[in-house]
Image 1: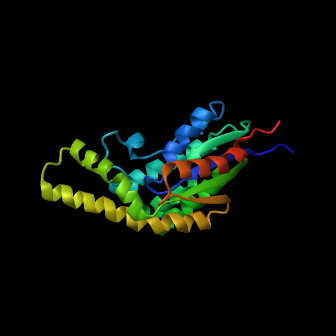
Image 2 (image 1 turned 60 degrees about the vertical axis):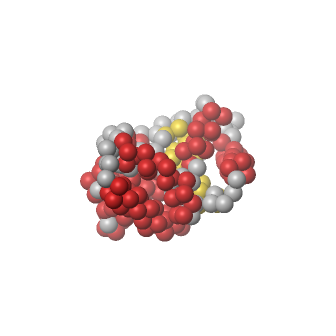
Image 3 (image 1 turned 180 degrees about the vertical axis):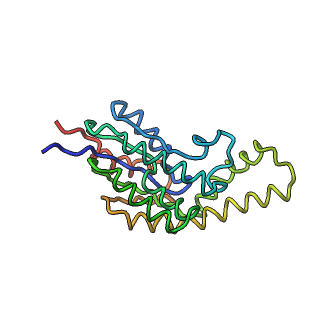
Length: 210
């Protein structure tokens, strides 16, 4: 019986460290295929205001493209690493509603046929995500040409609120999705401590069987 392709899924809230870990793994394991997160910047434009300003239509486009990438994974690969993937369900429920997420969750699960998914979820508290991401949001607002101080303040508050509102949905789908799962906390640790912990946890799953 052929061993299924391992699909390592690295997910977590904003500024949890998932993208940086993906980049570190890609340098360390250049022979493994990596699938980067699909988001408004890849679907709409680089000047998009980001996830807080996604609408129903855009989220569906992101999800459809994400599911297609999973379906297109070469099942002859031993290991593939993906960012966020099925954990996008947190965004789908928030922006598209419970009926939509029920349909998309089933579509995601079906797309994983022939794969052995393993989720590494980086749990990061909303206040920490906000603290780490705030400067980035200010830059986005600046690029959008917003000069009115009151409007800029409202937009920043909107970003902060969205981070808090979506956080419980990350946990909901982490527990709901029927895949192998591992949680790593990254709210109050020094980066060096977190990096060592997650890299040690993941590396044993990245060994390609003989």
